[in-house]
Image 1 (tube, rainbow, N blue to C red):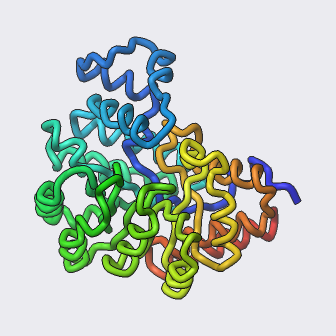
Image 2 (cartoon, rainbow, N blue to C red):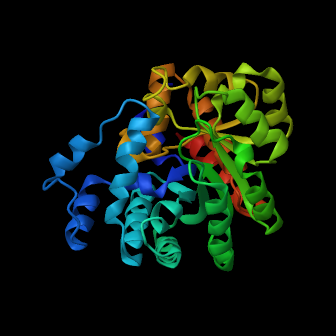
Image 3 (tube, rainbow, N blue to C red):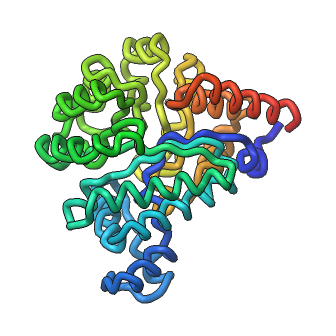
Length: 336
């Protein structure tokens, strides 16, 4: 049967690849700019929307990071996160693990404390929306190793507020191994590990190999170029390592949204799953991403359910919680 938008909207989901800064909708950006007396060069929602234009990773980041200037205070981060979590609840996201980039804020004078306290307060309040959420702190790979070291040191006193570390931003000339020491220290502190290995980048396979074999990541964010190396695919299948694919953001780099690679991984029983990345910038939240992939590739409901199950299975929650959510997903599949 055809997968409908309603089916993907109402299906219980886990979201594992979501940058909270990438949920800054034009309406909130303009509101915060006015509240914080920041001249962003736009006066209307339509003017803000017109700035959300790019055709590759570099041009996207050129829009993405300057937009963050409107985030100045703890309340701003709270509203950013809570607005996303309200949207996630409407998408029937039951569990979400949210990336945040503290260096993008502390480097412009915002305190780490304001960032994490605002985000954490939002995820606590979101329990009333019947959604549970955790935070993953990312290192910006185009910043220095020393900056990452200082950021981890800043963060560890707040270790009860986040569950893992990640690696994102511009991958060119910034391989995973650049941050091997920080990942070792994070793991020693009891934190989970994930890393972006963006699609179709220079040295993609080498970066994937470093992340998997040398840095012991538990998930690869994007990472679908792994299909170019069958041995590495065998590795992620054997070790149940998740791969988080984001179809709509992929379309800005690859015209086919890496759907062929997702299907190949799914057929190999790799734990690939679907997420929204930076939904305010790429035209859709998680249900939209499922629907876009299902429509473009004529996926069956069984394939969609398998992708959703993979997300729960590779999430960083207890086995007991996983069992509850997977039962909820299986029950949904039986009646829809």
